[in-house]
Length: 182
Image 1 (cartoon, rainbow, N blue to C red):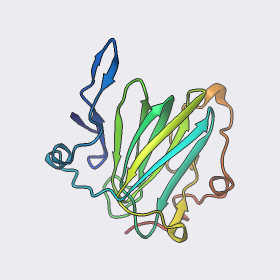
Image 2 (image 1 turned 90 degrees about the vertical axis):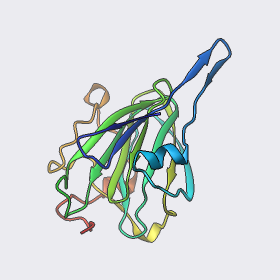
Image 3 (image 1 turned 120 degrees about the vertical axis):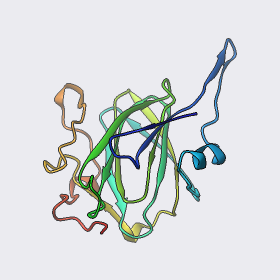
Image 4 (image 1 turned 45 degrees about the vertical axis):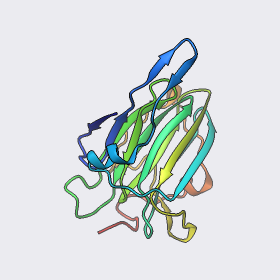
């Protein structure tokens, strides 16, 4: 595995070593000793799997208590995946990292606790799986506005069309009005 740093040092792109032949492919998507060696000492307690249609935008989600670190990958299709630093004391507060994750490139994104996470579906359909470091706690679940001008994410919207959002994401808070981490 190759661990590629981003401009926000805590967010890491993981590129697996893929073995392919006429029968298909094999790769390790997670190996504790390699992750620890790269400085990611996460204990995962929950796996999640979502399926979405093209133009769906999920996020930007986080939990104000029981914050979740997430190891995100795509097993079908392609998404534009986002991590936003929402730690007020961080030098990179309000900054974001975005990467295309797909079943074809097999890359993963490590998003540590203290970040909001979201993604936009680029392919006709996409299935996303991710490991989480804490349990989902609906009472602590929060959402940042996907198009907050203070964050200024450059979403690759298809034909410039407005994305399909959940009611929760339509009513999300801006960075300046949201409950965040210190």
